[in-house]
Length: 249
Ligand code: NAP
Image (cartoon, rainbow, N blue to C red; front, side, top):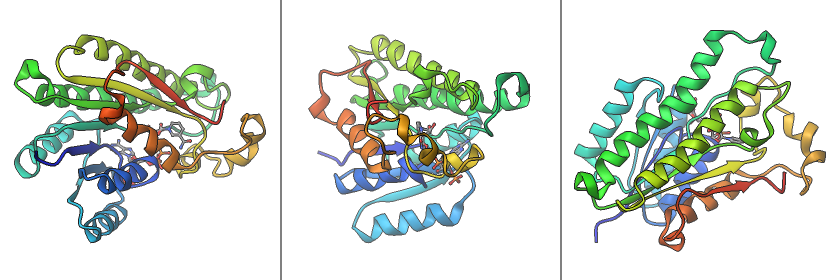
């Protein structure tokens, strides 16, 4: 059997990079996208290749449809067929109340976190679904606990975008349940990555960890292990499920 091929959006850092490393260790050929940090992406490719893995980094903004279409064409010609998609690329902006936000910000958040995930899911389904002649596969959408707790005083827009991702996970899973493609989600709690700096508070986890039942932030690897499990045959009867990886939060 040919080796499985995984595409991870936003795979150069944080949770995406941990997922890329674990997928490579489990025998996947790994393709990932990144937005702008080319050196970071290339360093990860070199690291994975040094272990004997096949790795490919592609610059793409998931909020731009043409970029996503180019990524899937590259996969088709260089590595395909795709068997697993992780919709991981996601952004937030500086913490503020909703009454201080503007439409530019909402457009960016929703275009990246929601529409980016939709376009990638569409392209993956067109290749993996047996209805389209594919051999099946699995999708994991990376949501956030913010979807359930709302992001008050920080980023209600980000939280709402992740709520939309959760709805897509459930609906798409049911839509294609007989077509060999499972669709699941993970909802991380506060995880040690650079995303908190982009919200303007690099030390955010230290501030809020007392409110986490396990009293600590999570590591990207703890999310990656859940993602790889949901993609694997170990989860063969699971679709439309969303697992909280949040220390009980
Ligand atoms: P991160 O450390 O900020 O890394 C973001 C990654 O996404 C980077 O590879 C970045 O590329 C890429 N990226 C950013 N915008 C992109 C775009 N428009 N198109 C394509 N790629 C893009 O993020 P993270 O903390 O690992 O978060 C990963 C996912 O987990 C996100 O969906 C996030 O919402 C979710 N999540 C995170 C936490 C947490 O506490 N960390 C909690 C809940 C949910 P460059 O390196 O080129 O910038």
